[in-house]
Length: 481
Image 1 (tube, rainbow, N blue to C red):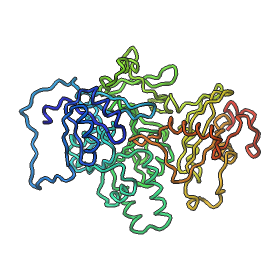
Image 2 (image 1 turned 60 degrees about the horizontal axis):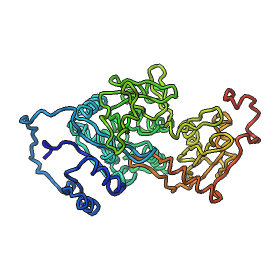
Image 3 (image 1 turned 60 degrees about the vertical axis):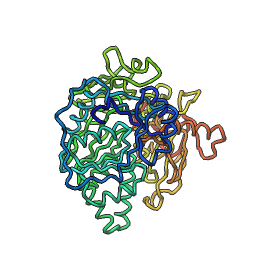
Image 4 (image 1 turned 90 degrees about the vertical axis):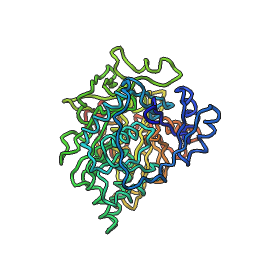
């Protein structure tokens, strides 16, 4: 069956059933493959659209230990420009789109990753990323083609299951989103602080056993990188910048050196197969051999709208290149906040806020403001205060956060938040399948709370005068730190 398969399309009907039905119609699907757990969701779609349903119970299938698999040489040569797979975009800035990749593009991406990570048959890959997402799909296929033993898991099962698996001390490679990096580091620190004994030692050994820890999709802060280097005895993370439309690596850091040669806020070197340019507005335009062919969309101009006259893909990300090193500053649509004549990059402020001992995660947004263009709003998820330094106050408010950012972190006044929403440690941040925060949804929730009175939200004016920050006459231009 696989020999005759024209292309594959990955979706998650349980999370986006309407989008799944729409895409199946667009791609003229002939077979809908499902597992038993989602058959009840796939069956109505199959019946309504007269698509054949094929159920795979791969979890229960066990092959004999003496099985031998041989790749047949008696195959027809296929057109490398034919479609290979349709993947979802992440959906952080709007409804996910179908991205069509060719066989040639996928092969280029897989070869790049295989060479980059030096994958061999001796590796055991812990793969708990959703395979309908770009990273989950390409590393599953890449692992298979590299001869790696790939262990698939349920990414929805939570961090505790991953922790238990790492304690077995046999995993050599792992792909993990930045959010999970923070969760695992927090558990590691808690076990070490409380004298976790054998539990701590098993996790520590499992982390040090990891040869490659691949992460990306969103900004991986310098503090998170430093924590993981310390946990893994100096071995740095492999931080990747790419996109669903690009499939292959664009920016990559060095994972083999005992001390990374790249700045901790960068995405490393631009991959040699990639051409990259920065537009007048700071947006990154990229062209590569692994770039997508087109969007699967009812909008006939969808693909044309994201390509420039030279065929470069407009990433929608703001970045810069300095000394041949790539820096990704955020999404043009929501991570660049314009206040009067200043630009504030949300990831920079999120990194500063995440260093506060009472904050486990920070989300920074721009809210419309009639006087200044936008206000900086910060949503702070509090950490367990029992884990914090006793010298720090156990209560935060907007004034305290602004003072801490100005005095302790040296931020200029125009970068200080004027809206604060504190959240308890169990606060659920809306996320995509690849665990990116959905900032548009968070922003809408904040605006609704403000309209309802905002009893949990603090606000102040941009030009507020506050004691304890000190007199900094050039502060508004950002010259005085």
